[in-house]
Image (cartoon, rainbow, N blue to C red; front, top):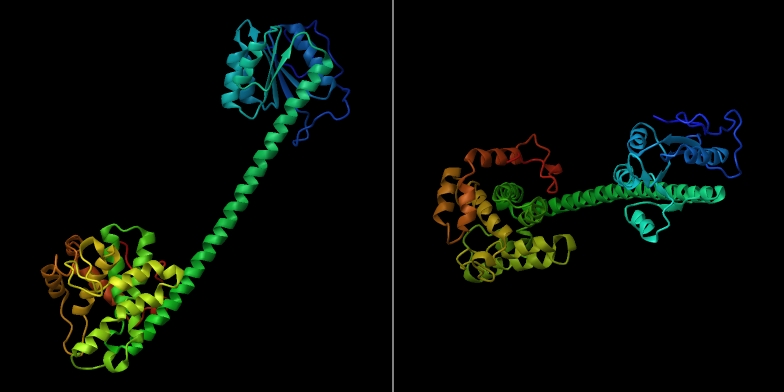
Length: 402
């Protein structure tokens, strides 16, 4: 196949040979990081040209391979690593430009210098457009050849250094991004632990709603998932659901704990808990979106709710989902004035109020979820052996997958 590691071409024994036992290495001759001379593939169908180029390159300390045509050259490249290709344009077995394009496409890290006796600027420009690093005109001086080779190899080294730097930079960015993600996740977790403490404080203030915040949050998450809400938005909705009654912290105990029915003026004060809760949360950046749900969680689909009489899609989707979950828990929980009723009763009542109090689309999704899931959620949250103190709204791991 005409391949040789010496300057003597095996197909042309008359070619001159260098002393391979003690090659003369010029000062500054390049060596690879693999501790071997850099390997150059010379492709030319003229044996004297191959021999002359090989001799000059080996004297300078390079390892030289030879090929008499494009097909042979590509076979060498597929099985042997090379740092540079010197290829004639016109050869008997085909156009060197075909070899150039194949090397450029399949071995883009190997620079190619085209060699030709054609003194035509348009040809040189064409080779550059096809991916050649440089264009060497025959006949050429040995120093011109060596200078061109060194420039091409320096270009390869620069590309490798750039790629190595890019890979290192990407790893650093990836590592720091992961550290930032973990820090944000830990921060969110600490936020939600704080929120849980606020919810527990509210439960202590309003004994009627003990455990209500966690149950209604679990129901809301489950219903939001079934509705097709994305994970990021579910976090927002969950926080709004959990803190929906936070405004009651500002309601006087005489009204909040009153055992009987509230009078007209007391009802007005009680209804302020939506606005008060909104103002508590809206100044906290990571709760600003959740504050909107707190503000509108008592709105009705037909516009009969409060505080703003919103109707239909004017009500945030999180609040529309919460409204169903809130009613589900209210009906199925004990109250001072009545005992808890069954999930079947809650299902019938929610269906009855579809289109008035509740969004019909949300009700339709709710009715597709079996009562067993709601019961399971309630049991998990209220179970005495559960680690309720570790309830995490960012991971909602207490909830089964839907």
